Length: 80
Length: 80
Length: 148
Length: 148
Image (spheres, rainbow over the protein chains, first blue to last red):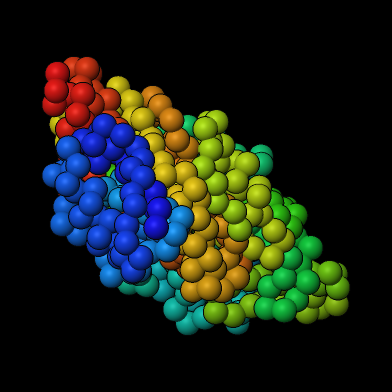
């Protein structure tokens, strides 16, 4: 299945991009997506268990993904 | 000695006036001033130990007064 | 740091600008306005009366205490007196600090102190033509009502 | 109840008017502004970047939770994004309620939730020409600095 991973702030700078398209096997989880992105050049900036959102809602590593999901890797936020 | 007692809000309404000039013996206290005002017509509205200020600062009943002091009898406040 | 009783309408933006500074990243404000009901009664307005000289002195003492307790704050506060209509602001308190926690803590503390210490009284005016002095725990009929 | 990310300058008076109502006698506001120093470094500005769609969704979830927790409040909040100068307001949160305690409690809770949950990042710009992503506990050099 096709999913899109969006990365932000320090993660985006390290990876040199804001978006990573991934093809993952059916049944893949958030954690699988995180591991895939972590293996890319610059991906070592991403911690083992980063904050993650699926389709604009915070999600845990075990959540199963679906075709077309938007996964986001979220560095420590600093708004306000 | 001459002192001035100022009264406010419900106290002023009950006494029908905003200010009461008093002549008290030397050594008189805040409590003496309160008792004097309480004996005036309408003075029963004033509790036994009202909030009192002397010269714009909250003061206790035992404080000794001096010539020219401004004593204020202060109903429960409700500003804000 | 400034506290004043005023008769003109209050303007929160002006007080915010007054305490703004490049060192202070957090500004907390409180605005009190006249409500249309109190204790289930329809209110048409409030006449705020003050023991003016003492109220200003006490407000300034409250601010001095707050500045001592919350190091680095700046504060501006205005309390309006006279007859206010429903929706009118009676008080604006603005506290600025480098960080949000002291600004919010100081704001709450100052508002509580004002409510319990400032020599200001509300004469609440009701739709049925009566009026009453409001106090925290009890209400006192004004003599004109009692005599009427 | 409204939360939005905006790029135009913020206006606290407008948000205060937005939540004003004759039933609500207490309005509490928080304004965050860009400070000239952070951790001892001279700051010239902050570039606020957001994961826009999620930030707006999360801000609205925060407000829904607050309205459920603090019955009777109304809230308006705007967070500005883009490049801000020292003194510019980055966030305004305004909470109104009949009484002051829920308004102040809800304000603090909402501000804390925004700080910990809204998908917004500060890229702090320093007088020495460098810039860093700010995070609550740690700071990360941006790649362009690291590579430079």
